[in-house]
Each structure stands twice: as C-alpha cells, then as structure tokens.
Length: 129
Ligand SMILES: [Zn+2]
Picture (cartoon, rainbow, N blue to C red):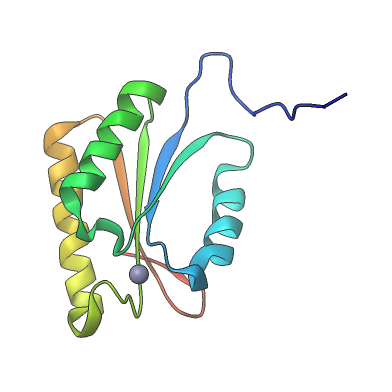
C-alpha cells in the first residue's frame, strides 16, 4: 500500500503571502529558516528566479496569479548580496532601487497588497529596505 502524503492546505485554499527570491543555492537554508519563522503554519507561495525582482514583468505576473488563485495579502521581495544575475552593478543601492520599483509597480496593479522589501546578506541577515 502506498501512503500518500497529504498536502497542507487551508479549507478555502488561500495563502497569506508570496515570497520572491533568487535561485542562488547559498541562500536557500536562510530562506527556509526565515519562512518557517515568519509564516509558521500559514501558507505561502514561493517563486525563485535568478536575480529576484530583476525580471520585473515575470515577478508581477506571478504576484498577480498568486493573488487571483490564493488570495494573498502580502508580498515579500527578497534580493541578495553578491547576486550573479546582477554582476558588478549589484550593489545595495541598485538592489534597493529595483526593489522599490517593483513595490511601486505592484502597488499600481494590486493596491490592496502589502509589499515588504528585504535584502539578504551572505551572512544570512535579512535587512529591511
Ligand atoms: Zn542571485
């Protein structure tokens, strides 16, 4: 007999948030720990793509879908230090600029969402932007 693992879900099929971060393997343990602490048993959608918010149209599309499908209330956009997708231009100021732009665009499209911006350092610190 095969035992199927039941997927966690709320009866109404809703999630609290969407989390957008980079694919970079060096940060996955930090992100997993942070999501456990932040969301506990609450559901969240997760997007990982190289450069985090660098590919903004794709990110906005995912946020929009997450909102439509899972009725999220919050968006966490997490870029990180030493991101290969940004290369040499990827200093804190550039990430901050891109994160703020992403927040602006999301607010224009879906004003009801609360957007949180974070910058993850190589040592695992989540800095508010
Ligand atoms: Zn990266």
